[in-house]
Image (cartoon, rainbow, N blue to C red; front, side):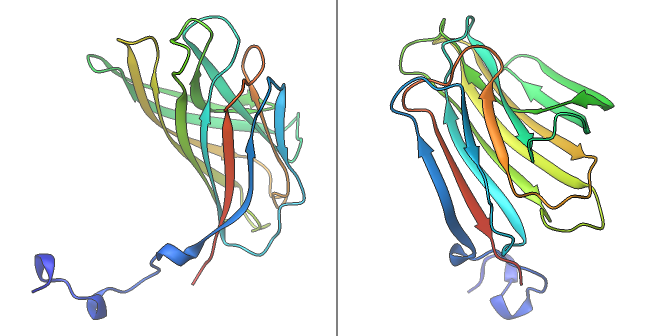
Length: 190
């Protein structure tokens, strides 16, 4: 008996099946590094997904993991953010005034416990479509110091129609440290 009365034959549209994701590249740091770059990203997928865990040696309990698209230091990004910490929820937005990078995930800083990392999943939709701007969405979570947590959902609009072939990741402050891992996947379309 199908759950909720839905059978596979009654579902229409595009489904992402387990085989729809293909690993393109993974970088796992063995020493502190300023940035991680994925270049020459193949244009053979419909969407991209980045899965990451990260930590920086920058001060504080929380820092940003920044992503620059196509090494573009001039194009603007707009941002919408919804976040919470277990007691307070907040919303924030910017209308096309952030330049040179997208602050995609919160990662832990040097004031957090030694083995605590921030994590996130980043989706870049229609990354090769040159007829529209790109939408980037992130789901992120972070345990900051043993008692403080934060989670969030962000969306960004990258205001360029250039196909995406390069992604650079860096910490908002300091270097990305050992065991930081960023994995890039291609998502097949129907």
